[in-house]
Image (cartoon, rainbow, N blue to C red):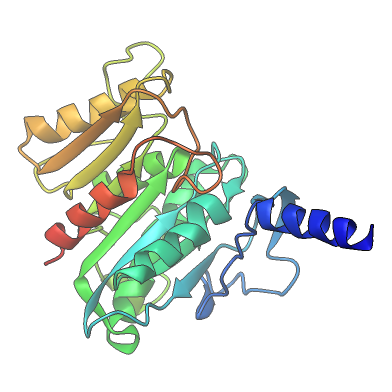
Length: 283
């Protein structure tokens, strides 16, 4: 009887879903010096199964994940989790992506931008964050001309917002980091949101001003994520109109919010396509 019980426990253990551990950042920096990081008070967090949701960020931060496979002067990517500008989908659209980027030699940063419902503050956070990364590129072994952004859902909108609003910062200068360009060199938008208007689904919203200097983009979208299909089309169409290099990959089924696919399974391998594009655009 004891042997049978042990066997049953062993089978349950082997069949259980693997626990995906959230990696620890190499370094964490406050984005704004007047809002220093205070352990335990930076954000409010709740956990649903293995998914971590950050529900409030008042002290935005930049988490550096250093790749041990990176070559000198390696590319880097700032990751913008989604969550409708209400929360941050912290691990499956944040730290999991950092680990994936690290696996093929890219340094990664998860940006904890201001939420909830603070779109302008989020843009300020991201503009400042990319300036900080450029200012520390020599210290961190990063090529300052190969710094990109990767955003999911609302983070996709924020990526497009930062990619088209970099000539003038949305805040007053803080320090020398703000003298450097806040334009990303390339961008990845995965199931991007809010890149259309209610009045005209085929038009970009007024804050997204695509021109010939907008960085190249890689966009992932599924057709059954019907509310967000116009966003992907509109951004790609605008880039094409000004001859900015871009790729749009459409898939039939997958819905919204699947991240890398570790939690919500999909039948397509967008990370493999994206990895190939990233290696090409940064070579």
